Length: 132
Image (cartoon, rainbow, N blue to C red; front, side, top):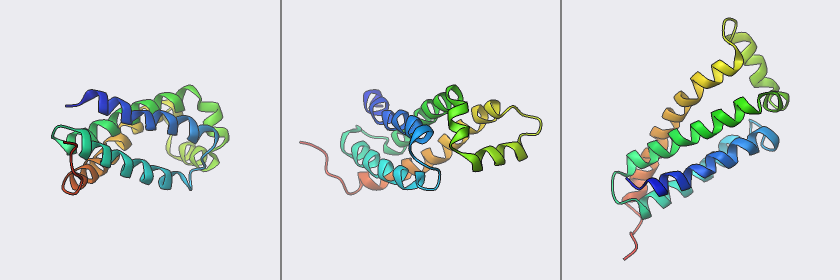
């Protein structure tokens, strides 16, 4: 496993964590993630030694750690700019504290998106040429 590559690509997640708190609204966030996944899949296909799917999965899991931590730390700012998520949390989280709910759902979303990035990375590995 190329841990330097995994950590480097996970910095997209750190940047997105802050961007989604302050700049990027929920309805446009998936478009940013699509671009990030395409770039990440390309880089994994080009620079990972093998196990492309696993590299993609691990990148997304580390992304989820960054995002969950930033969203919990900046919870008040995040909720202030994400009214729809606040309403959803209020409905679902009757017995949970919203931060605890983020702590639980963050890694689940990271794993699900990791399967997607892993698949993208695997497909990209069939197309992208490795450096000589």
